[in-house]
Figure 1 (cartoon, rainbow, N blue to C red):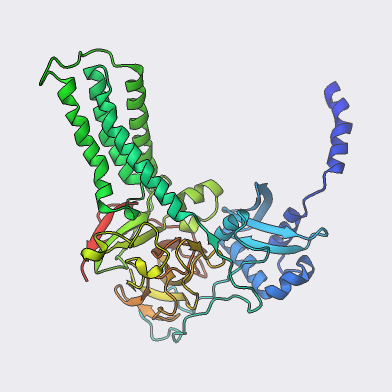
Figure 2: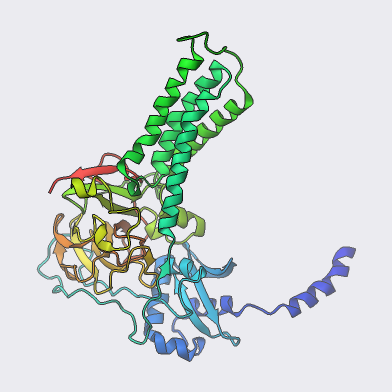
Amino acid sequence: MSTRDRLLSPLLAQLRRNVPADPVPQALVTAFTAEQLDPELFSPELLRRVPLERLQATVDTLRERHGAVRGVRRQRELYLVQFAQGAEPVWAETTPDGRLTSLVTGPGALTARRGGVPSQTRIVVPSAPPRGAGNCAPSHAAAAPEPPEQPSTPTTTPAPTPSRTPQATTLTRLVLAYLAAALAEATLPFVSGTATGWLLLTATTPALAWYALRTGPTHALPPWFRALPVAAVGLALLAGLRALPVFGPGLRWGVPGLPELLIFAAVLGLAGWTQYRSRPIHPSPSAHPLTLRSPLRGGCFTLVEGGGPAVNRYAQESLATGAGRHRRHAVDLVQLGDGPQWRGRRALGLAPAGNERYAIFGHPVLSPCDGVVVTAVDGLPDHAPQLLAVDHPEGNHVAIDTGRALVVLSWLRQDSIRVRRGQHLTAGTAVAAVGNSGDGAEPSLHLRAETRTSHPTPGSGAGLPFRFTELRGDPLRGRRFRIPD
């Protein structure tokens, strides 16, 4: 031991004795490693809200999904439970003697970290699938269809406390930023002092226009806003009348200035990086995307989430936190209304407060594949736009087992589900209607595919990439397609 270590070791030991140990990691390790949960691990208030059987089912589901527990570490305000295969974010609190008083797992933990969930458990355990759910072909021996399940929330749990999101303010700021970017895109070629600089700045305008259209909220803007970046490219070309000897001597050809070189390199680098990060994350080189039919027909639809982490918040969250792998390839779909009232907009206004003012609300949802319904949850209310149902991220949802994957349709309208657990479906069968019952900010359809597990339930597998038969290429944010009835 060095002299410095000998001098510092007593001080470090004293500091360790003075810093109180965090009881949450030990409580989580005990809960996730025990074969049978001990009631002494939880506070009486928690057990009154959530039965011990539901807590046991949640722990068993996570262990089956990720394997054995390897440890727990603190990650900012959350705890990351590390398993043999993957990790799960957890927001938990304990009493001074180490009893758990609250526990939030999965995507809800991220909201609870921001204070969007009261200090109480938010656990929803999917029901077990029926026998024979893994068989795609119709079978007369399958279990009789059961009615849609009601959300498994204890009757003593208070009503969900929604979290307000500044969606309208954010969209307004994005519109202003959109205008500023288009103005800069059109102005910069006019201020160059050399013809070479004009050429470089003009070459950046298509890249900047592509970046704005790929990453911007074009689904929320009026149709004429989408023409601004393209119009800016035309104005940049008009600047060539000043740079080239058309109506005068023009500008000299020479070494461009440093600002032109920096802008050229920055814009092309940004566009190239965005293109690379827009590609969906493939689970393995040999993985082939699942092919699905569009669950929406009879209109023009656009993807507001989809693709890689640059254009898909689900992919970004799964990479940033290591959790939410089942949502990594999820997409959100909205409708662009037809007729003089809608004029190609997804809503009557920038961010209206009523669900009925969104074109997709109540639109029929069809089965995108053949398979067996293994989960059908109905009865959750449709919340107002810009409010998030953090207690039930899936909202009303239906999960279909295709034999190869589990296809999940979420955020459905209350009391609209027309299928039952155990029912065999074919592609195109009417399932429900689009609602706003999940953790989306506005009415839309949340669709994803997961790998099958021994007990296929939503969230139990890893996300699978998929494509639509009606759309060529990958489903990326901003892509549009029109499908007749």
